[in-house]
Length: 338
Image 1 (cartoon, rainbow, N blue to C red):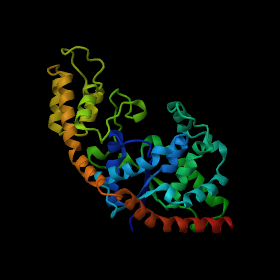
Image 2 (cartoon, rainbow, N blue to C red):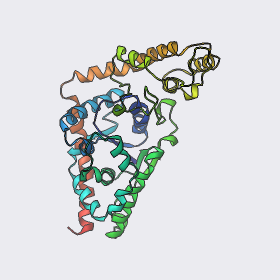
Image 3 (cartoon, one colour):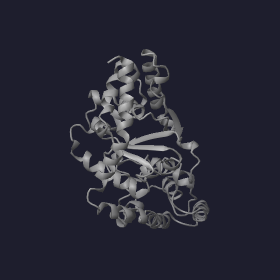
Image 4 (cartoon, rainbow, N blue to C red):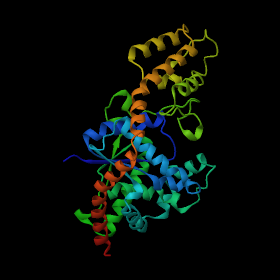
């Protein structure tokens, strides 16, 4: 039997190229190699959007349409909404009993995200508990593997520590919670567009909607062209006659993900020789990106025209996921003695 792998996404906005290359391409590959469980993390979204949660439901359905249009197959993988599996909240309660406050306080991204999202009030208990909620999401489905990047390993290790403490506290033995293992994106050996790439935004920083530097996979051709023309290139190249360095050019790093090797080699050669300018490169990148996303966007429009399609996918996924969650909770109740 194939191992079960699980990952989720917060529905806090439209998907952009960072999502597309950073995780979605790996999700496509994993659905053929594992029992793949993919959830829309609406409760996680609520931890930061609790003051204005009105868009979470809309973004949830849009995310499902994006996933399926990109190639996720509900017959191959399980796509469900976090809040449809109420057993997650009960498991979170049990895990919170054995999780020291100090473990949550040392979570690497806790203060980092508070600083990055300074426009939101993140002083709530829900946000503080999100690492434990992540653990509950994974454990409730008996997931053996979790695809992560190197920077996410501390989060998964915290979850593993919580599981170990729960199992030790209640002398679980073989009936205990499954301790998940990392599935590093860099070890998947996928094609260049499925390697968990770290995608720079138009300003050179990591692509993020909160930075206002994202190219969304739903952007129109004109929007893509406009954003491409504002994309940062080699900051040291001030004049057309200055040789450039493609390795430090954010535009080039994204272009490599969508263009063929010969074209990329040609741009690298002329850039280093200062025989071509950045404007033609931006124009070529824009047209390549428009063409690259064309099939996805056409499929996305077809799915969007089907009334209730996203809700049907989520309902079917919940029906597959819920029995697993119920069995996990029963084991936990037995172990705790309730």
